[in-house]
Image 1 (cartoon, helix red, strand yellow):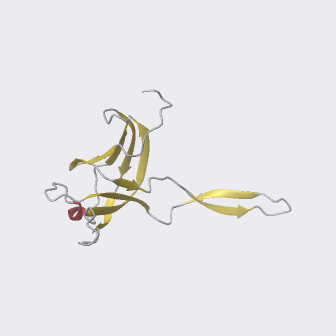
Image 2 (spheres, rainbow, N blue to C red):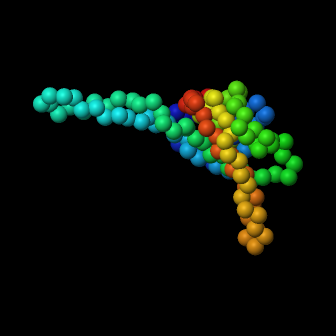
Image 3 (cartoon, rainbow, N blue to C red):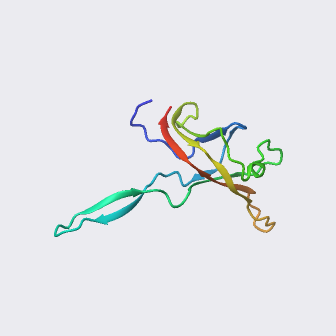
Length: 141
């Protein structure tokens, strides 16, 4: 595959120790640092930017359709720190070749919920999982 190929955001899979599964959305894939600004004394106008330790945990939200015979029981993982990494693999348009990966280490499921049960709207039942993590490694396949 050409290195300059633009990837589509709909062709991805998630895997961890319990196996591989698909999701409808993964939100908050981001990396950021917090800065502290320190003014230097004297007559000069320099401001130094220093990296601060994080004050909030890093979060990732995974959303997927809820299946009646699903072997993955996300609710059972609630509050249990996971030692095995969570891997998000982004595939090419054909869905056969992994083009990019994100490895999430030191993660814990902190929130799990189902969408509202509403007979009038008749929508797909969605499962949402929110995890906090220590490190996200951005890599290629």
